Image (cartoon, rainbow, N blue to C red; front, side):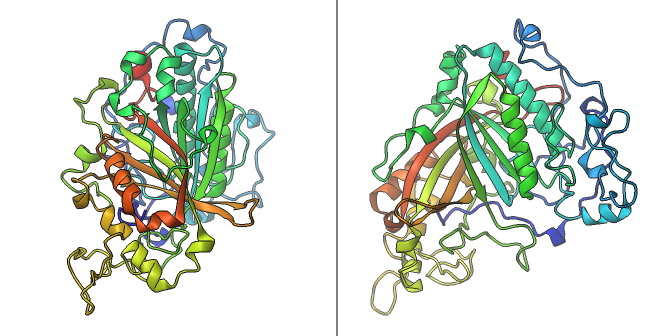
Length: 477
């Protein structure tokens, strides 16, 4: 888990985002500047092409699951700038039930110039939540389509979800039935990402559009998988730098599912909060290790080739997308914490204090796999996790790791139910995740202290352009 790093969480002190004026409706928003959505703490901008409008599948307009855009004004959460003591909250005034309303406050604006003001754009070439910097709070949830629901209902659902995601990520209230949980908060780097599981294609009659890369993952000897908490027709990843903002999005997505889909499983995770350290740095996991150093970076020339499906990819609807492998990895913390720091470092192959390889240097110094100590033994043990997981030890296999930690209390045996919600991204899981996991399965020293308890593989299509919804090219193609 430690060798390939996660996107770093930016310090709130470095943020330069500013609160933007509220939008009266998504259709009136001016187009943002073109750029790849990404890992900057500044306000992200869209990389989408020009918007285009298309009709939904036949009969969608008559579907009870469909929703038309509301004609009422939607006021941004970011306009609720802490003025309750001065002007009060306009909850009952004419049209007050439509959403959030209050006069802007310069004082509150200043407060939101850090974590709360950071905004990631929904529309773009790629979906948000892939190269976005690690967020402090995350929810992973899988849905199964309801009995009798098919392609038409799935299209209506993805249209609803996309509308909700765009509004919430912009700091606005949900279109209908908003819970007010995030009323006082800015966007807080909220991202909502959607994917399709292997079973989705049979349920919607789209088997011929199912990618080969979505074939089920092979069995691994270290697996102890709970099938009830694995896979699913649809997958949603939610991340934010505020817990209430993340929960607000989770509830909105669940409510939007309506009668079209039901929750199959849900997992909740967390990371270090922005600004919690004196400088931006690679995060630590629940074993206390700096969790990763060699993550592919968007600035690298082969990043897109390894992580994102090319524009000429197969099938065409996956252009600009990626494949997410999701694993709930239980850490056997009681056993791990009995080890000395020296033994823990030998298991990982890196120093616990600063993440540097045992062969010396800093966190980013290249690992010397051949270096030996005075006793003639390899400084980095032959079964060290960091050695085995290296891309150059696996035919160049690489993946973008973007996990969350989890802690779900104490289990029946009295030990922590805690570990890592492992999420990794790659252009092809058969060339990314699978070769590395097979190698780890055969001799990773860390395998004694972890247990893979659930698994899922999801096709995550490219981002939606203005006027489109995620998955439209698949469901209407």
